[in-house]
Length: 81
Image 1: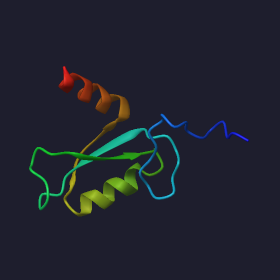
Image 2 (image 1 turned 90 degrees about the vertical axis):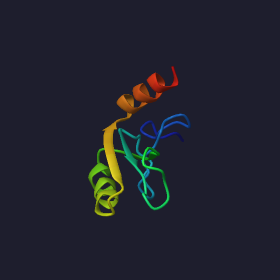
Image 3 (image 1 turned 180 degrees about the vertical axis):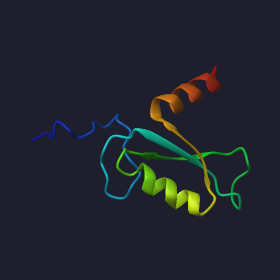
């Protein structure tokens, strides 16, 4: 039986533990002890987990940017051109 609310295999999902909700947000971050300043790692977040994941990264000084998934995809697409 298929859950009509479950994301398909192509849908980006939230990075929060055990969450399977579709991602709405991209949290761009880096660990300055490991990454060059321009490097960006990403976590994806649903609306419910955006604040929790942002706080986790922010408390460590890792969070660099929070944008909607479509905005991030547009930035990435423009950078590839």
